[in-house]
Length: 278
Ligand SMILES: Nc1ncnc2c1ncn2[C@@H]1O[C@H](COP(=O)(O)OP(=O)(O)OP(=O)(O)O)[C@@H](O)[C@H]1O
Ligand SMILES: [Mg+2]
Image (cartoon, rainbow, N blue to C red; front, side):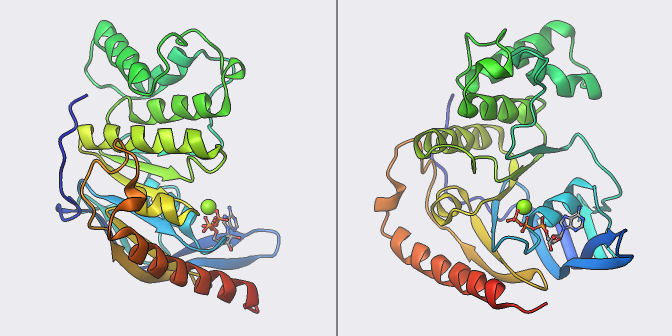
């Protein structure tokens, strides 16, 4: 892989634009509406790695669902490449915390899945090559014919990442993908994800509860406030890449101040959430 050091690339053209977006859920049993996010103004720029943090229940997953096209705004708009998001698209690919791999399929068959739903114009042998190379990129070569139950949690998560990225979607939506992993595996996967994303020039929206993960991966970190969920502050992380391939981003002079600032905001929000009366 040929990862060139780059500076923060967060200022490409707008790819996803939410304007005054209010969105939520219909609670069927109680016959009422639950507003999850209100008056959201947030732009995801082409090529940027945007991280969302905020207390549990503030609406982070809801935002990703709206970008994926699984929810429609109640008020305001959300657009992708200038067009209103009306439904799902293979251009926008999701990777989840709970792996979401198919237990009855081998690693290779799992990674190949997106090609079954999308006509990429590639021949069978080109698809084969792309699947093999993506399996190699996430460090699973030799496990092509293994089934998920034969893999560790970290390895299963790599299958999920490989599957989400194999068709090189323009936008990757990642909902706490590393939340369930041990610290070391998590660091290794963060570094691999950074390299993959840099090489492919992909745009990423990534949710985490870890401040360190947010600063390690994000070009910008959006802090979402709780009830009603809205954007409280957006922080620029102007630390050059690759940050993780070389290890120790924590020694960077900017790191401490960024961490302290972000921690203050998140703590504030978490306390606010606990004390909230609804
Ligand atoms: N399918 C659903 N039906 C009804 N309400 C929902 C649904 N999904 C989420 N909610 C509600 O919407 C609000 C926002 O939830 P969301 O899952 O977006 O939060 P989150 O920030 O991702 O939280 P967490 O960090 O715990 O994953 C919460 O009040 C939640 O109860
Ligand atoms: Mg969530």
